[in-house]
Image 1 (tube, each protein chain N blue to C red):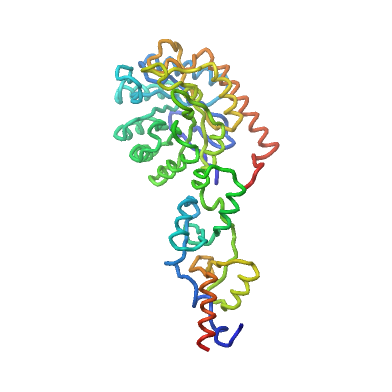
Image 2: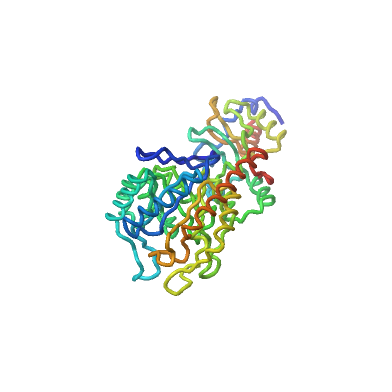
Length: 292
Length: 143
């Protein structure tokens, strides 16, 4: 399978490429758009770290969190206000922006503003969602459902391709292990890479304990560094992390978002591991100890 | 077993034409290819690119050997693109070849099926051993 590179292009920023042999790209931001000021502040803060480390990045924040466990949980600012804030962030900071969308009817507006559109893990095999994502014409960030095997993600890729979009980024955000527990099967990365598409590791949702606290999800943030290094060593091409400057008061995913003060230490190590992986590949070649 | 009349038989006279020949695109998943074999009651599928050029062949034996060698979960194996498991650049033959020469080739290579291609390597049919032998026997009986 030929390795594919996805391209994020806009007049607002220099092209970003995600793919085999390319630099590690960060996708980061607060889980939900909480306010215009907060989004701007987070973009400024994350951008500063990325500039310091020499990492290209994409600002991620969602305008409507439709998968919350409780009807009283914060859903977000909504389509119109949320997308306007994302457009403002891109304009002000020269950074590409992305959000997920949870209803096919939200696809056109999301694609109008976002430089990459994200399909939530729970909806990763819904044909109507994949049709809407493909129709945006933007790269599609497709998260592997917690219930999906990595090899079956090919079916979702084939749907996107059939709808005319072959700019796909596949992400592992953990796999259900019994109830209220996720684990990362690191075999996900080489298996999903067999599709030819680049792969990404979602470091903050992977340590989630889904709905473990009754009506909200818990998390084990202490494992973010370990799992991130492991994923980078496995050859991911992008790293996804939800980052917040005040996790206890985050309006969404307060138990899993990475405290901003740790972003540099986690990202620096991920970048170093990624570069080492590239060096090892250049020296020893592709992994192929059991050719079929 | 050669006779004057069976010498005149060509592959075109007895081959399975395209409506009876299982063909799959390179990116078809293995599970669907096995279903195609089942539907046609044959143990082989010709793998083609979008222009119908022959790029591989997959037999039941290839799948058997793969099952014994690859310790993948069955669901993962079934989800693979068929070209991953196909024999690339398989032996093929053209329709104008004498049937006895084709049978010689099948015997020499110990194969039951020969994809039939045109000058551009596009698949036009399949020579299956049973049909080939039936053609020869029919000719012998007539003579």
